[in-house]
Amino acid sequence: MTDDAPHPWLRVSREGPVQTVTLANPAERNAQVPSLWRALAEVGAAVPDEVRVVLLRGDGTSFSAGLHRRMRQPGGLPGETDLLTLAATSGDRLDEVIAGFQRGFTVWSSVPAVVVAVVQGHAIGAGFQLALAADLRLLAEDALLAMRETSLGLVPDLGGSKPLVDLVGYARAMEICATGRFVGAREAVDIGLASAAVPADTLDAAVDDLVAALLAAPRDALRELKPLLRNAAEASPADQLRAERDAQTRLLTAMATRIPAPARSVP
Image 1 (spheres, one colour):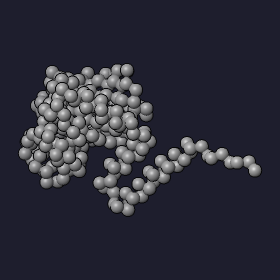
Image 2 (cartoon, one colour):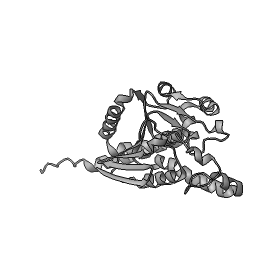
Image 3 (cartoon, one colour):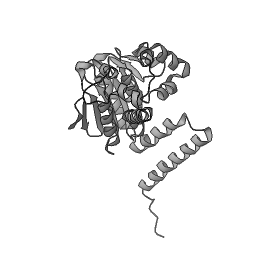
Image 4 (spheres, one colour):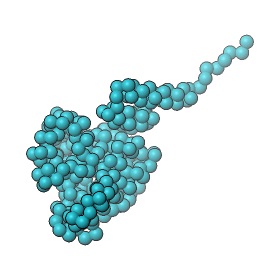
């Protein structure tokens, strides 16, 4: 196993084809800051080609309580971007800065590996949006998801709005964001936000089972499947049919090159 710490609040480890990216500030329920988002973007962009599954996890009792509360106060946190001062001085610069923040979340859609968010306890705001950035979400039964930005006079701006609407539809996404209410694990499964919810004491075993199932699938097929399905929501029917044909052609061609040609009989 290899380990790395690209940020004081982030830990990255790898065991064979599985990489685990862990938010590592449990004393503050893995609250997030801009420097952490930049580190996430760098980690996502550097996932080795040999990695087939990436797990996004949080240390302690919560996945992530979202943006660190001091980031919403004048002066923010030492060493971090002062969002309020920046907003007051330059709207254009603020747009550029937020775009940089978003890369820590959007990067995971372009990672060839299957990305799984493993969520226990709270996943609020930026925490919820990080979970939405994954391909799959596996929840402990104590998980509570909430998009609190609107309640604070803001909107979700870290790439979470589109996957939320894609998963649950416009009306339900509007209700979840506008009210800021908690979505429990069972409801999350029922409305399509999560693939499964399991007792907290069996979460690690469920993760192991899911990882084993993903690793059992042929690598090349999964790598074609991820972009195929991610693009399906926006593609026209004709474009999606073309994408299916293109992906299948690549897989069949590769398969054919690995099958030995039948021996010819000599007359």
